[in-house]
Length: 483
Image (cartoon, rainbow, N blue to C red; front, side, top):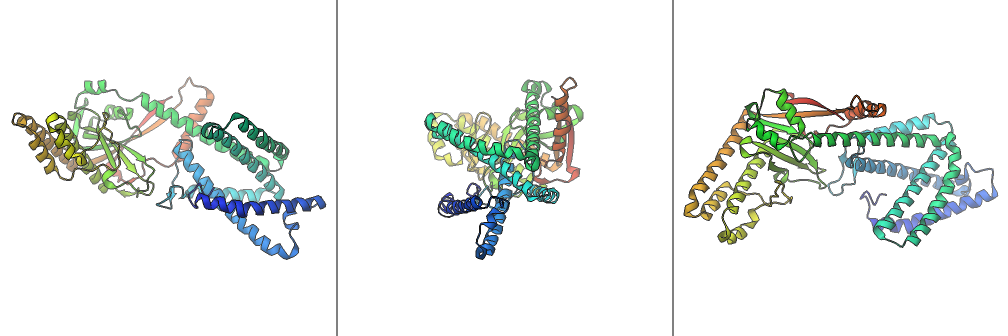
């Protein structure tokens, strides 16, 4: 378990288990079994009773150290499971602190740590005897063993592709043995085992409700995206007044125009002259360089001044950066994107005669997909805008001087427009989407969506936690989706 969490190399764990842990376990269990064969009435204290009197205190010390290691293993594994469940959309977002720049698995979740402390204290204070704790531990341990056998069986079938006869033999032997032990533990459900079953049901219900509600919300947002035909009908003014300034609209969608933007248009009498849809995503690297943090693409024609930005953060990036620093980096990256886009268009219009020139400048080019996405993290940025103009003018023939000058003037005009919009101010437009069950929905669906999922969503960690934005620069519009 510690090897999976990147605390120790896999080989060291394998060697220590085979040559140290396994022999100790075998000797310990054989000693207890031999003692119980002679002393049937002393089953409650078989471990310490089977130890010779002279070795009691060393064994007691080792047992306490083992308990500390087991506690550490449990909390660390719980952190890892919750983090993976959150990444799969099966658990509400929590604050996760990464304690290592080298390994992703070394994490700490403060809320969950306090929750485990509170639950442990409550269980220890309320359970009347140590036998109930043992029964709860037994059913939990057997449940883990059976789940491990089932998962190993799937690995043998899908990944290792072992012969079906060997797989069936493995399942019948190990799972059959575990089911026999599990059936014996079920008789003690009323004597402490119910605690584990209740906790498992609560966790399963919470994860199911969050996954079900999040999936419905995302599917509804995708269905209610604004179409490009509607945007063309509205025109470049979007059917309202374009006020000076930049509006950063935060949304989880990375493709299309979110429906909450239409809610902004119908609610507000004016919209900013430049709109940027910002989506924050976390990538599995420790730190994303600031020069590579933002990916841009155009959403509408150039006259609309609407862009999409994907802000990428690593798991060790500082997520409480000043909003002014964030705005400055975003505007600089947008300008570089526009320059790269202009350079790409000029190179595409050069023709076959300039193929050598394109190969000679391949280091300064970027690969822009048809949807505007950039594929690589390590894409060289264009260092100087003057080099771009020089390359464009040298590649043009005498008959193409006028189009090149028009393209240059268009580029300068758009860059000037961005600077003016920046000077007018940046406003953070936060669309707070919520879901409610329709009136004709089943009672269970209304209960799950309107109460349980709503409670989890109100108390989970906000998705936009990367900036410290003053309230004077923030505007929030709520929108309710009927599902």
